[in-house]
Amino acid sequence: MCTNFIFRRLLAVGTGVLLSLQAYAGPVIQHWQTTSGSEVYFVENHDLPMIDLSVNFSAGSARDEKAKSGLAGVTRYMMALGAAGMSDEQISQRMADVGAVLGGDLDADRASLKLRTLSSARERDQALDVFSKILQQPDFPDAVLEREKARIVAGLKEAETQPESISSKAFMTALYGSHPYALDESGEPETVTALKREDLQDFYHSYYGARGAVIALMGDL
Image (cartoon, rainbow, N blue to C red; front, side, top):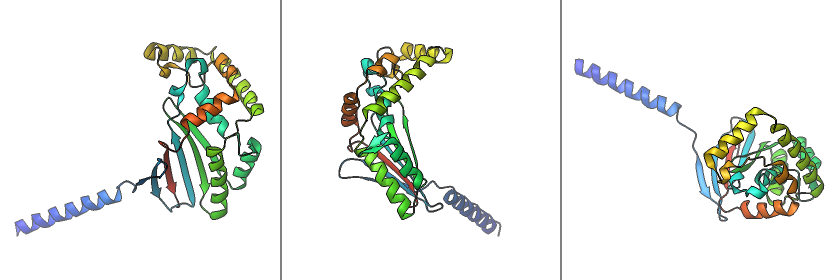
């Protein structure tokens, strides 16, 4: 009788542990590779009528040369400021019209563009249409580039007066020496000033290809 009692207790505990593990199990991540060489990771979730999409490229600031420091960051940023003949205002308006949000990140190794949109057909299709044009047909308009370069340079010159910025740059130089990791992601005033539209186009064509891209999808799909 004692043995049966112990067995029942162990069985109950084991069942409880199993149920707990199931309750706290992570999301199911589906993975596949496209015919063009992109890696796709997808988590299906219908709790909210939303989709989050991130496309990552090996296009971080470590791809910069010292003479063109800041090129990776300016290229990624400018992609969303003119594409397929749409101006930055038109892109913003089309996204705002369906409540979609554009974003992106840059570090030493990766550059990403991100989209959050509602999953309903009209909103999703319009947001994805604009997003795909940003990815595939960035214009890098000269007038916008000059405007953004002036803004970036003003910020860099202000940063040169900040102790935190000065010490950070000194630390990275001491740590990485002549390696591209030592370069400031934002560039230097003189290197950003010298950037041309052709530089952005060349960088884009070199590093923003489908092969090697990583696509993360999550949401109501």
